[in-house]
Amino acid sequence: MAFSINTHDSWGVVNVGSFTTLEQARQAFRDLCADPWYRQDGTVKGAELLDNTNPAAPQRLDWCSFQ
Image (cartoon, rainbow, N blue to C red; front, side, top):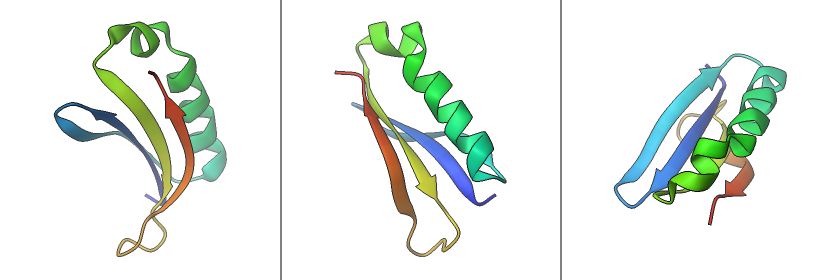
């Protein structure tokens, strides 16, 4: 998969989704950033959208902070 979404919290980084197209990844990222559970949970600090086209050097395309 060329694109992925990770969340960040006190325990580390968790991959929450992988996508074949940027359009799919951006839609899922927008939905996740707007999700009330993530906003109110308090332990999840943020989410990032990554371009994994080059697995040796993933590039961050977007970031969302929940704090």
